[in-house]
Amino acid sequence: MATTFLFWNLNQKPLQSVIASLVLQYEVDVLMLAECSIPPDVLLRTLNRPGEADYHYAPGICEKIQIFTRFTAKFVQPVFEANRLTIRHLKLPGQTDVLLAVIHGISKRNYSDEGQIFEAEKLSNTIKNTERRIGHTRTVLVGDLNILVKD
Image (cartoon, rainbow, N blue to C red):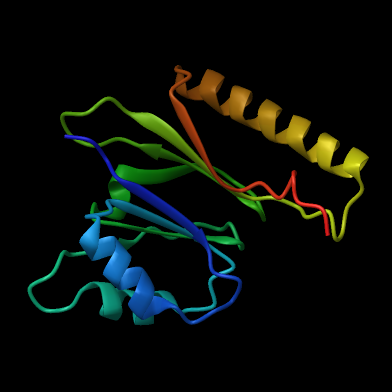
């Protein structure tokens, strides 16, 4: 059975009803949100309507990313956390484990091309180091990289 992922940069918009509709329609297993101003308890109440799926908040220290999952948080453990990046070890029973790297990258609005290149190299090194520590290279990278956007 394939795991279904959804990432969305909400740009601080209160879109919990839209999110819940998408998550339920597409049977999303792991929901990753950037720039989310919706408190986790409010989003959980919206996702967990009576008779619907049972979603859980998978907290971490990454300030820019929130993760919600159909699995309990013990299956989505943080193995690296920073302000704009969280790497989770997704270990589901009966499935091959993967690393899930979720990023909210720096934008061209605030950084030069050189600054973004430096941050991209840092991201690459962080992922490689985490893969070495965990012992495999099965990493899924998702997020708002902001690298190709020119304002």
